[in-house]
Length: 283
Image: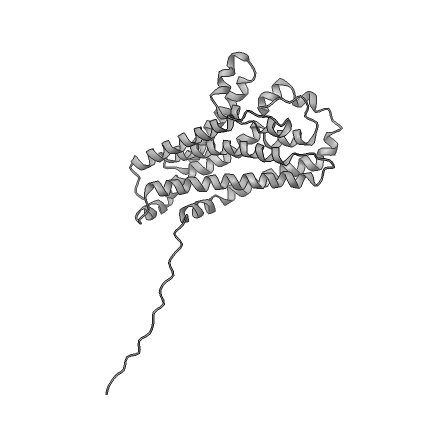
């Protein structure tokens, strides 16, 4: 008997999306800390908006404009009773820059070591993916996390103004203040990537980056207390983060944010060099 064969057309498999896969995965891994930071910004902004009528009845100028508090907040204002000044002190002072910047630094510090711990780095580098591309896409994911935090913080400020009559917030200066804070995020991201390039434990790398920022905040606070310690202010990033001045008094030194950007680039590029030259552990 003659047999006939029926040819079936096999569907061509769909190609996987290759663009920024590492970035998307790394950003997905950081969704919990990013969400926590966004919730905190929203919570603080809403509290200020809801309690602002009661705050106006208190004499906060004598407290918030003192030298001791100025050292802690990283800014000294002549008046701190209007809504713009209060929201600036709550979301753009040194304490909150340390909080949000520390969050970005922790994400950046743990991004690379986490892939070493779970073995995904070996799988990625076994494909035609260079170390440089892997590092840069991971760095990009941290910067995107900082952009998301920045946008959600601006949204939180806008939401809080709905509860305040005549908030008089300058949106142009709010964007400038948030851009200054993002410049600090850039430093935090570069610092975290530098520690993550040679530390294998994610918590250790993230904690080390946060510890350096904590030390810088301490230097910023001590430098504001005495004229003999002003050198401590000039060598750390908080001194160049003038988000409070930008939003509250509509003034800042234009080249200060570029110092932060350059410092972040130096840290990030140094981390890239270390990551390319080191021997990666096998899992």
